[in-house]
Length: 257
Image 1 (cartoon, rainbow, N blue to C red):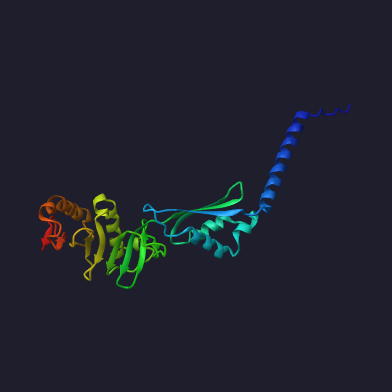
Image 2 (cartoon, one colour):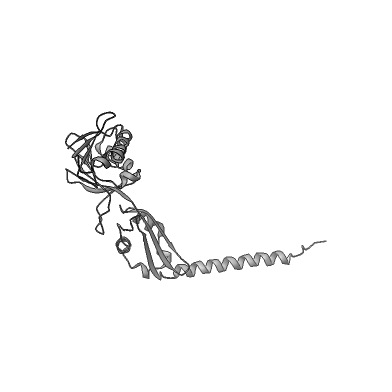
């Protein structure tokens, strides 16, 4: 006798429910894809100083030039947010770009800027910034970053300058990082000059002394001696008494009026 299997109505109901959910999700995606971008909301996070190397208007213009259309009238299905991020991160002022579309069809663009730590003005006409990772940045048309300025006989920039065995730019960058890591020197030194002999000379914000480091070797020891001299010696002698403070000699601080 042929046995007809009993139907499991509960199982069929569950399958039908999943099918309906899937259809609703698919229709929602199709409807979303056919929708248009409502507007573009650009946010550029300011630097610690509160300034911006790149403006929201710059970001909008870059998107318009790269994608060749008005994004606010583009179908969502045609928007490639990953490509937008890659394009924006090619800008020398942009450290990270994050783009996404919210539930209300608004395109959000959030920008983290590169933080400049040093401006280089070398004898070969070079004029650029270096960020905290050693990346090169051009001067910004929006504002001049208030950072240490380096001048003089500085080796030309190359992307791999930090890997070189000997480079005045590498030494300059390392000196800058050491100064910025110290609360006293980060607010005290305004310029680093490299003379024709390749010696590094610090120029303080207060007073008109030249602080001769010489080479970048034994930098921590030289700066330690300098800090002790400023904290213990100069308060009694006066900040403007000496024209040069020489740290080239081991264990000494040699001053000239």
